[in-house]
Length: 443
Ligand SMILES: [Zn+2]
Image 1 (cartoon, rainbow, N blue to C red):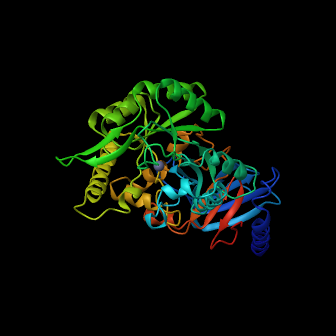
Image 2: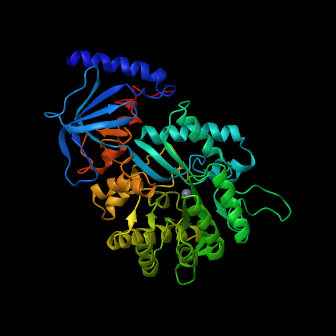
Image 3: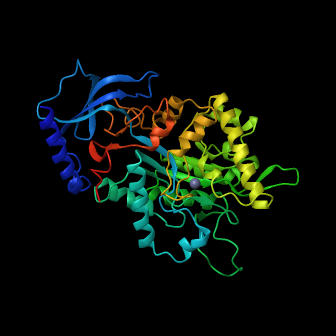
């Protein structure tokens, strides 16, 4: 029986390489995963020796191996030496950004010289990178001048043409005049912007309507832009939209039953974001006590992005270097305060802001280094964002009725969180994408 299963797996693997991304798992296909250890983020203690029964795209049953029967004809995948978890959720990505290396033209060249097709081709690679690292769902936080490209990538993934995670798309992003690159060009030179620029509540509402009409699952708003350190050593951030402008966007999005994510570092822009009714605060580098209290009261989600603020620091004692160090330092303090206050924290990295070749899971190490328990860190990338995305019970859990988004690692991430950087098994929607050293990688 064992060798037959192994043969079936090899066949499955061989077929998956060719077919996995062109044919969704047929509803009749039954797969059983034998999990040595199963982490269910809804409970504190992992379970052992579990069977997960998958029919088509969804999980049908989960139970003790001794009490759960293997349906006849099922493909059995043996992960009895592994720790199995729900597919992870990344709540702040940019598939259309590639790290903005200044030596390669930085941010500007992407909008000025890169063809849309080139950017789209690279975004497909970013999407696959997320999936192969175990992130089966991403909330992509705007395309940086690539228009509605994320909606197209999402569709290509859903239709099985390319491999990638489930995408919640925000499309173009919104800021104000003076509130987003490209900038620094002579007046009168018409350059593209990395977001849709609005001024006034009427334009704000219209932008939200357009973006929702063209497929935005969320709206992304930049509530702060430039930041610097003042003469007293405090981080200062330039606010962008007024409360009235933001309220028009939030009102429109909520009418469509969609949510609004606000990039906000600190100060006036952060407070306007909360007064305007943002659903999630992105980065939130410096959360003062009033902001934390308001987030708690309003149930605002907090998506810190620690990793990206520890990369590419300017030289010490330069204005950029001081700013970069100040950002990281206040972000760490805010993260700790948010944890103490019991804010709803979701895992996000801003990957794309740093190259997609770098590991997304590094964020877990920063979170636990700053005092979050490994289980809470796992929840921030599973059950919590599932709730934020109104997908409770459908993603972020291994439970009957959920999509079969399942990953595995060899060791125990509750003991060593860096294990999550060595995901060696990825299934999404019941389709095997990766097993061991890339055997099932499509494309
Ligand atoms: Zn971002």
